[in-house]
Length: 113
Length: 110
Image (cartoon, rainbow over all chains, first blue to last red; front, side, top):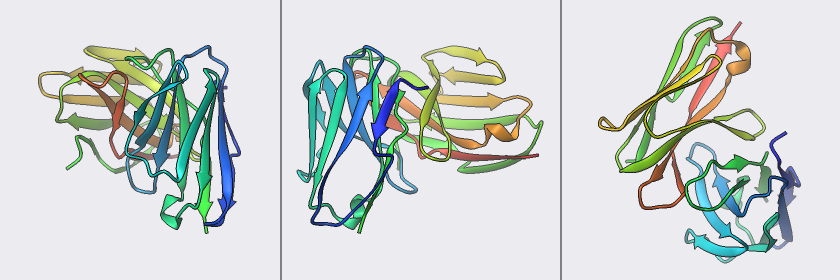
């Protein structure tokens, strides 16, 4: 058990849909991350939250909208996505956002039709 | 060119073989991670190291800061070791932000 859960595990959506990905960590951590993993490419950092405040946005298009209501929960709201956004979206958490081991969730496999 | 390069990209071994996966990086770092990703996507952290060598069971990780190089070794490999192994570095100026290699797909046949 990783202590970081993600739902749903699989999601298929059309380009006009609105959906949300959810991440929850049970480790008492204060930093949470969203990563994107596309086929044959390294993981890419999308967003970082530290103590509920967004500290990094890695030039992510506005069709991806993160939300961190508390240190245990992180959401990624999706709207008007493109087929090239199809990927594995991974959530991670760490004690804080400064130099700590990160614990990853199982990921959400997203397919945009 | 990626800041973090891994080799080989793909590796097939027979059960019991000694395996080495290499990672080279071109930036100043404060730490290096080795991660394991199984089919289905979940990622597990194997090691975080900033100098020397660490050992956990059949896994050994080494790092040479001067040469900007790290290796992950698996002794007495087993089919359950089949996974993607990812090297990631923490840049000196980036807090805990990770820069990832492309990963090495390891397949261990019985």
